[in-house]
Amino acid sequence: MGKSWFLGILLLQIIPTKAAFGVGGGVSVDSGRGGVWIGGGINTQTPSGSSNSRHDTAYTALQRWKSAITDDPFGILDTWVGSNVCSYRGVFCADSQQELYTPPGLVVAGIDLNNANLQGSLVKELSLLSDMSLLHLNSNRFTGTVPDTFRDLSSLSELDLSNNHFSGPFPSVTLLLPNLIYLDLRFNNFSGPIHEDLFNMNLDAIFLNNNQFEGQIPSNIGNSPASVINLANNKFSGNIPPSFGYMGPALKQVLFLNNQLTGCIPEGVGFLTEMEVLDLSFNSLMGQLPNSLSCLNEIEVLNLDHNKLSGVLPDPVCSLRGLVTLNFSYNFFSGFSQECTKLFFRNVGFDFSVNCIPGRDMQRPKPECSMIPGGGLNCLRVPSARPMICD
Ligand SMILES: *[C@@H]1O[C@H](CO)[C@@H](O)[C@H](O)[C@H]1NC(C)=O
Ligand SMILES: *[C@@H]1O[C@H](CO)[C@@H](O)[C@H](O)[C@H]1NC(C)=O
Picture (cartoon, rainbow, N blue to C red):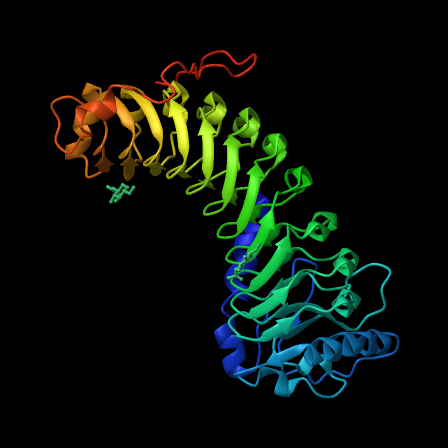
């Protein structure tokens, strides 16, 4: 709870980079480490003593990176000259005074080059920026992968590489960052499986959507304390692991849409009582819905459309008070109960088209409904969990 709040504040204040670019800095927030952020162009403090050597190190890292950037349409890197790295656009320094064991002075605590449209690659020397807690590179044209040296970025808490052209396997070096809480790889061309260590980390936000990831969702997903997990628009296959339901009370958003997931929706989903958005649409999930869905008291968006689900949509699900969207279209449901008809008067986007519901419009042609996919599947089979019904 406290953690996601902290993240929210941090993101709110750091993300509006256009302003930071426009006025040459001046972003000032609590870095969470007692630092004062000083944006490009307004730093007049002279680094002292041993922090000079840190500046030299940072200078080396940033100049090396600059030389690996082949296009800079907004001329942002024109400001990357001279030894005062704290004056570079997109580079944010913090006072290290309140850190134990380190001499006072300004250190590079973050780089925010969101929307800079830079073309190039990451360089291994970036790992010299060992005080950096934020690296935001959203919406650029970086290619390649994440250098292995990034394991040395032990202060890094937010890594945003989204909307670039990164490729290759999942950057497993990110799994070695002990303080990472925000990992955003979405809208790239990463491919292959993901490693189960991802779910043993302390990540609050996991964005892997819109890549080419494939293979099964690791079975230890229940270990993750994340509040947001987005795996949408990849090629994940296999079942949703039964441990999913143990992801914990922080979980608010789950987006698994548009993959190749099969099997039942695990009954343990009912433990995720703070969940607000659950989108499992465009997969191949089968069988009946778990009654435990009725435990999702905070749910607003429940999208299960374009699967192979069947059975009758039960009353307790339609009774959920916060529903805004309940989309069951393009499945094989055979009916919905009395409570569900009330949804028509409740201003809920209730979509049951293209199912097998007798007497309703816009249903599948009869022959398609004669063979229900996964008809023999018994979905109530979470080991040791007693059937969950909330009402
Ligand atoms: C993404 O990677 C795949 C190989 O994994 C490649 O075939 C494809 O061209 C790449 N797409 C883009 C947009 O780079
Ligand atoms: C339900 O999902 C389908 C796509 O699968 C979409 O076309 C439709 O607009 C959705 N309905 C509502 C009420 O959101």
